[in-house]
Amino acid sequence: MKRTAHRRLTAKALSPLIGIAAALAIGGPTGLAIGIAAWWISRRLLRADPDRAERLAASRLAPHWPWTLDLIAAGMRAGAPFPQAASAVANAERGPMGERLARFAQAVHLGATAVEAAPELGRLPGADRLARQLDRSSS
Image 1 (cartoon, rainbow, N blue to C red):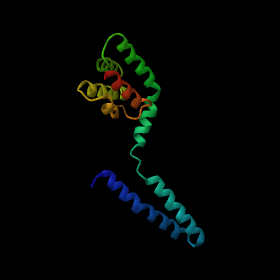
Image 2: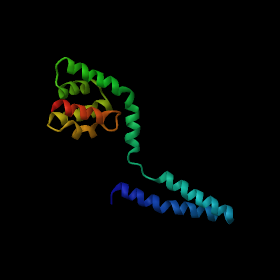
Image 3: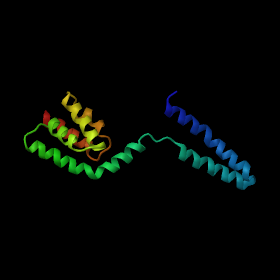
Image 4: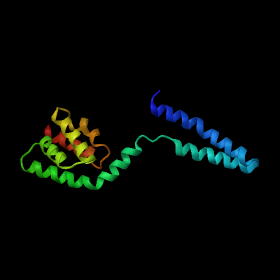
């Protein structure tokens, strides 16, 4: 069983148990209300969110993204094709931004369209628009 499927199953089984335990521990109508609240809160907290990590990473990288695009544009103004300019910038930038940009540039260099390679950039703001514009300029 995959890890995420296992986590979802655990969350589904654990939430009602938390609610029942809270209701039994307190008892009466108050315990019932608190049990329902504990079930609902635990269900919300245990729910898997696979995009959360990507959203957080993209929000951390978003302030650096315009600077990265400016560097790529400078390389292209100097006459380098996009994959070469993006690879040069990716080599200069270490860390997650450089890794994402390197994967994107490599995919485009190997023949993928920019739209096909755009998932390598993740949820960076405007990445999909950049990919569409690169494809449009290449055709």
